[in-house]
Amino acid sequence: MAETVLDATVAVAYGTAVQQSVITVEWRSGLTAKAAVERSGLLEEYPEIDAENLVLGIFGRPVPEQHVLQPGDRVEIGRPLIRDPREMRWEAVADGGVVGQKKSD
Image (cartoon, rainbow, N blue to C red; front, side, top):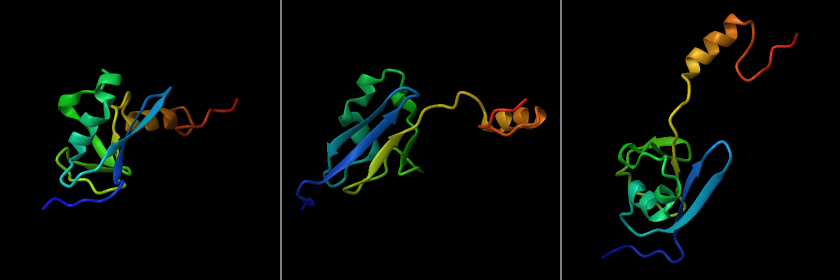
């Protein structure tokens, strides 16, 4: 028999540099991270999301698309990195600075 939890939901989140969207999806027993993303409508709202190669996490912890969700989980859709963070640190150190801080003159 399927598990029933009254008013159980999960959140699906995606953010860009300009905007963040968090959509609530009804939870049902066996709901996977990928199914929640598909039900959220975010794939249609943000066509830049690569639906074939989703990078997903729950509260910042990476999970596979087939991860079975629990009520209250927050599925986060990752974006590809624009630059390699290691490269950015090396460049900052070479300039005498630290990543995230402007060099004072």
